[in-house]
Image (cartoon, rainbow over all chains, first blue to last red; front, side, top):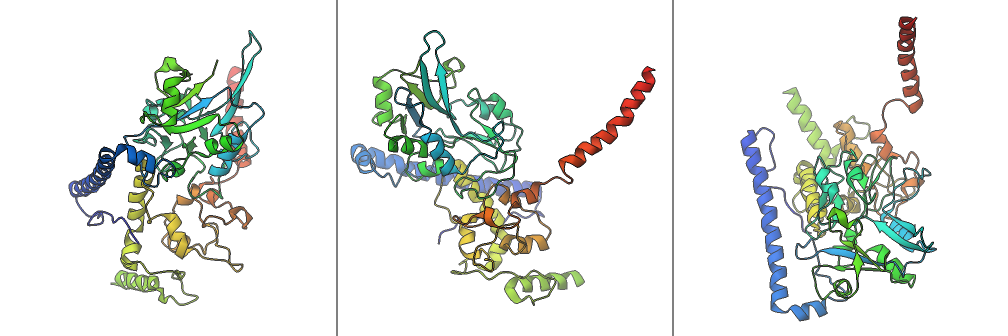
Length: 270
Length: 163
């Protein structure tokens, strides 16, 4: 059994504030050091044998643990492959993360939704999934008064429900309407996707899977349905499938005028 | 001195020596291996450890963490007569046994499930344990009634003033 111990001396409320601050600092320093060691190890592996590592972990990257600043996770959605009558990604997300209808469609959670677009000039319609775009400069993070809305080192934008006060500024700031507020008490959550009344939530890019080297549930469901419209991968790795496709074919970010640089991109769109 | 004695009795009861019918909490027996750090350590520090690790998990993506609610359930979950682990809505839930006694409200289970994965929390009576912690006093009807009572004289005054 391996446990992480709290700081050497448990924080004592009788300590003077200065000493407590010191104790906190030590704690933080320890975390940072650990983090550094971990990234150091990752870099060493990559430098020693870049090709081998990529091949070896291509199928099941078991070592791909923790948020790594050397990566940026993203999605590429091929709108031409997305079928209007298919709801597989939404269904899979709902099952994976345990959000469902409470019978109040106007306030129900929507981590991912299908959007149908119609060109009014030509009548041509397109269907595509919309979810948190995992921006590089996320407006939701900018406005959060408590620091609950946050971006991980690997680019995944999350809500830390431990510190979320439910003010919903992030929902107003998000240009993609990607976040939902939980209005009703929730039970029967998935242990990997806690969610509760009074907090804001959104697509986590299935962070619990990604940390174990997996892919998001929507991507798997889309592939299982035979559409392969969503690709998941590391945007910083030029050899990943997603980077290669992005380099080869045109794609767009939604609302490029905002310069938020979304991690989710769309191809064959428009 | 009396306080010290009371504390001593409390500590003893935590050690599992509470008599049935006593006013002190009856700590449910856990299964599995005992904590290497000792029970005293965990009783004193469990929240610090979980708090420390939640940041590592959520913000840093470190998933190789065992001081988590999920791990607690493995050994500490209390089962009902049918052998199903009870939810936080049941006062026999292992967290509540001590926390109710100490009158410390935990809000973990507003977001986290209070049973191991696979248990249907909806199937249990009074399952709304998430609501248990957040329900405001009175219902919506009462609030509306109150507003009505408050509003009416004010409106009448305004009308009178207008006349």
